[in-house]
Image (cartoon, rainbow, N blue to C red; front, side, top):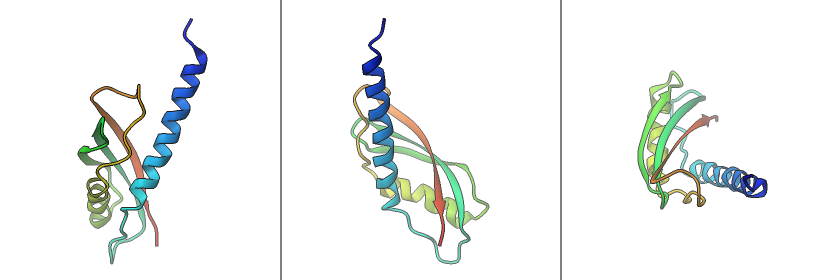
Length: 102
């Protein structure tokens, strides 16, 4: 039988890393002047060292400035905190909501 403790530990380390990653991304967020508040869904891939290898819009906010800023934010934030051991292979694909508010 698989070691349940290891599974719980890896789930906890993934959750902890995701929280650290989101906090890191938020430091690079800029609210574009003239844009309306909204939420953008962005998909991106990182390598094992945390370097962003791709970023794209998967759910627009209805405001082109916010949509562009969300993708630009991901690129500016590279490198992000590297993923924990045992998560994914050579590259890790993620999608996150980016909420813009005044």
